[in-house]
Length: 569
Image (cartoon, rainbow, N blue to C red):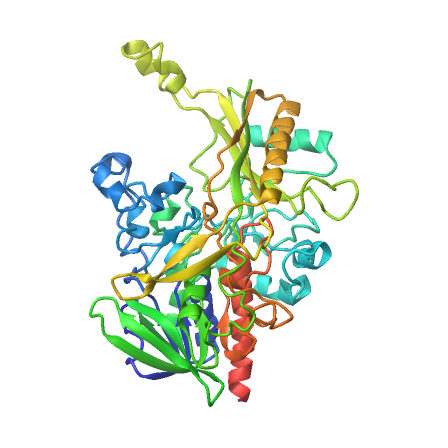
């Protein structure tokens, strides 16, 4: 893929897609395969599959700083580095420079961003789980937020549609709270994980352990030139095999093959143009990041897929006589109801035995314990908090650190470092965040970026429900490990700010009523139906599952709705 390589750049298209990440790539694929001439705009530079993955094959000794980050470099990514792992030397080039792309915090918010073709689809965790009616009905039942305008049956066929294309490995469980996907063969649990799985089945009737469901190719099905996972666990660098799903290896090449896509990187969309007379959007205003040139592109349909915060920012900047507070913002909910998943609370422990067992490769996946709290019956009800959480984690053999104190040098040390250490296991909760109007973002027109655009200010925090849930995350993780014979079990609560899950969502939520929501059941802006928003901004509640698969399914569903509308009007 090259800039403007698919057709001559023109002023008007059938459709415009803003963003090239998980959602934008999916929108481009569906629209182009359905015959629409589509302009895809990305604010960052070009990243070509394989060609532009500079660290994909490097070992630590191949890198100048052996995988660490210099103090000078850290100064440019002080916020991006808050996760503790995103800005190491092999990965940091895919995360933005905080000095070049500033934002503001009334309350701390860890906004992790990748401004390039492919967006965060290159760096995501690849965990892929469906939402269920437990999630789609939750708001209505407990009164938080607004009711989703869809149910599981509305999106289920689109989950299948997406899964068959991207490749999702996993194990069928038949759980109502975690519907099964269209799976390729599951990755294997190691011996200690199997031990915990068996122990859970003996001690509990409400919980089980399975291998994580991940967007990695594991079977023999042809995925248009993508190869099966090689267990390198270097995914965030970009995979030369295309073994995990990314826009760069999958959806954008599929769109390119149609001949209907024009891809333009280095293009910041800052406004969707609304025509008061026509009562619809007619195009977008763009700033070229390299030349600072102002451009206008027109289209009949617009898909806003820039990510939850960026999409809300574009809509908020899109003001007109009809929409003085931002495009489609009659409800006043635009920019509000920010959600993420809270994590970093759980337990870990050691276990004796299994010294004759090991594992092969670096499996890019862990275990998953599906939600077992508040499933709608008295047995699972936990009155201290609403909604629930799942666990991710895994087991492995510890490193050589236990030998270093006693054996810091000499022949004995050299022999010992060749021996694997003991087994350890960790369980970390991923919890649901309730929608709350007070958790919001605003635009600061006094603090502009280098392109003269307003910067984002965050004012969001974990509320009481999330904090109470974390206590249960710790207690239950410790209990499960102890019952399974683990020793030296310690709980942890590494509470960070919202954003840490990199699952921000909810800023332009779907709903049944235009007075309380921004989007309808088809992801259209209630009052501007030729504008669709299908990234995390559209989410009405968060569930406790990793959300990217849902974004893709909603995008595919909305794109096909747009195609039908376009071809009949």
